[in-house]
Image 1 (cartoon, rainbow, N blue to C red):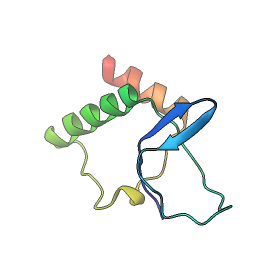
Image 2 (image 1 turned 180 degrees about the vertical axis):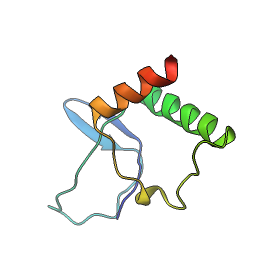
Image 3 (image 1 turned 90 degrees about the horizontal axis):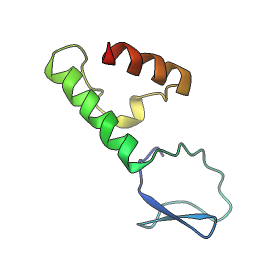
Length: 80
């Protein structure tokens, strides 16, 4: 399963806003993005798609995560 969820950080714990289809004790991998960063990412992707520079994947689960270093490099290139 690969899913993007929204959670609230409170008292040292992340609390999903909706139930997750996980079993008790199941280990998962998390990538934490602030909501602001997520909105910026969506705007960048929409701009690149509109310009015909990229084609979005059919499913978000088809996308591999990008390292923070690669993300910063891409951001600098787009701002230039």
